[in-house]
Length: 183
Image (cartoon, rainbow, N blue to C red; front, side, top):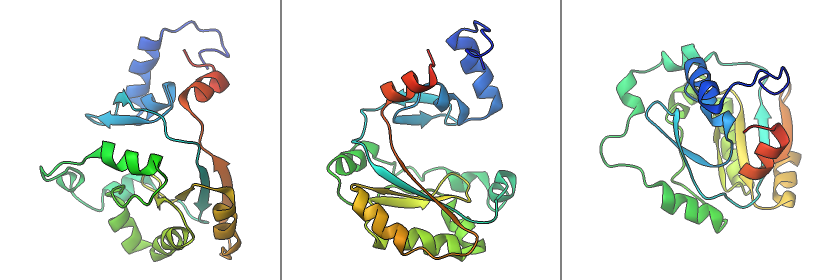
């Protein structure tokens, strides 16, 4: 909107507005691979991953974010002090091997309510996805694949009434910024 309406708002102003809209919104001002800190709105850029193929599985229902977060207490979203080591996990993904270290704390609660979402995640993993899981608070499930034929093979196995399946490919930060003309 800043560009389309020629508002001339600085990146700092846009970042402040994005933080007020939601913790994940600042990410879309920069794109690429980033580690979120704090509420997730303070971002640190990470080296890009290789281009990967993605399958998005969208069920015929939505999951309101507030309802998902209401399923458990705030403390269950934080680590117990053991910490999470992102760099080793990213290194394995860059080498295109399975990455069991990626997780979404919301999955366990959402999957209890909608086991079909867990079934799709498991099917994507069995179909060769490097990583598969719930996108944010749902309801979309995603799978990342090293090669198009793996994605296509996983897609061919899907026969779920009312579900939509979308194939796409990851892009790097420079492509993202050029495509969407962010500063």
